[in-house]
Amino acid sequence: MSDALRVRPATLDDIPRLAAIEDLSNGRDAAADILASELTRSWARLFAGEMDREVVAFLDGWLVADEFEVHFVASHPSLRRQGFGAAVLDASLTAAAAEGARTSVLEVRRGNVAAQGLYRSRGFEVVAERVAYYRDGEDALVLRCDLARYLGGPRTAV
Ligand SMILES: CC(C)(COP(=O)(O)OP(=O)(O)OC[C@H]1O[C@@H](n2cnc3c(N)ncnc32)[C@H](O)[C@@H]1OP(=O)(O)O)[C@@H](O)C(=O)NCCC(=O)NCCS
Image 1 (tube, helix red, strand yellow):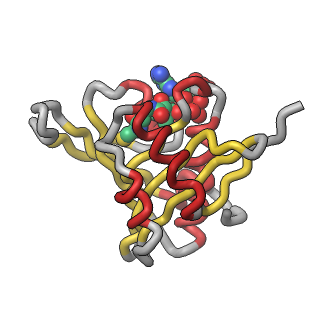
Image 2 (cartoon, rainbow, N blue to C red):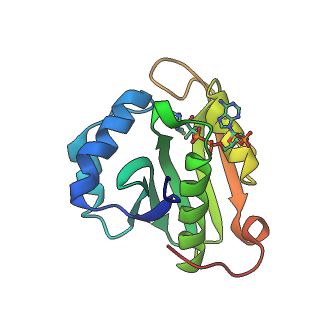
């Protein structure tokens, strides 16, 4: 029987696995050293979702003043639509709110239907569009989530 997913702060030992998930996801120029450098930044928050001792999803974000910027979230391609992306995002938003974040913001490619579905299911709404924002010319959508409204009452942090 599988354990439930556990979301926890990522450590240096997790970096190869996170980089592998990122490489397989092709959503960002993955580099283990970039992910590792996040662990040295006091404002960065790197969360790993682990099940049966294997990391299956992760989130990389920055907590800047009262805003939590989500930079990247991914679940392993062979394990999608099983709630792992949502669980990691929920836990990260809850942890950020516990640290004082009032809103969460992010950019997503206009054509990234899966990510937009995930973010909208977690209370994010489009607040701006950035035309030809990415190097390949694709537009970015800027999404924002009011954490107090989405999370409702008090939650337990990661
Ligand atoms: C986006 C991503 C993280 C979603 O992870 P996931 O583990 O498959 O998502 P979940 O199973 O938790 O899905 C939660 C909700 O998100 C939405 N969603 C997820 N995948 C979707 C898809 N392909 N199409 C539409 N909605 C989708 C649904 O509302 C879903 O709830 P449901 O399954 O009950 O309908 C995953 O597709 C991924 O890693 N993509 C590549 C990396 C990436 O593009 N990251 C975002 C960069 S900004």
